[in-house]
Image 1: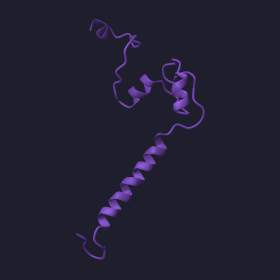
Image 2 (image 1 turned 90 degrees about the vertical axis):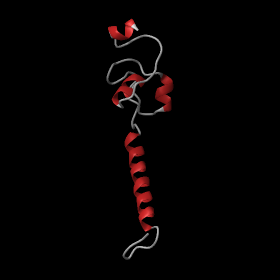
Image 3 (image 1 turned 180 degrees about the vertical axis):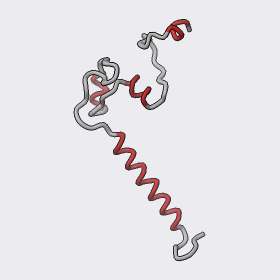
Image 4 (image 1 turned 60 degrees about the vertical axis):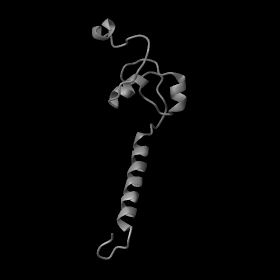
Length: 89
């Protein structure tokens, strides 16, 4: 329902345009730029070549990137953080 001088559906079109603009802005902000590092900028571990090729400009390993984004990554293998709690489980 449009009110005033706007036509029907104008509010929805404006909301859609705003959402699309924000999505584009977020994509540009997330995209790494420059040359990929061979070692993680935070922990110093080697970044696998497949990750460097898949994400040009990557600066963090998978674990550090997930930690920075606030997500837990389910990974098998060695406990690199050395937490005694996780070793007891």
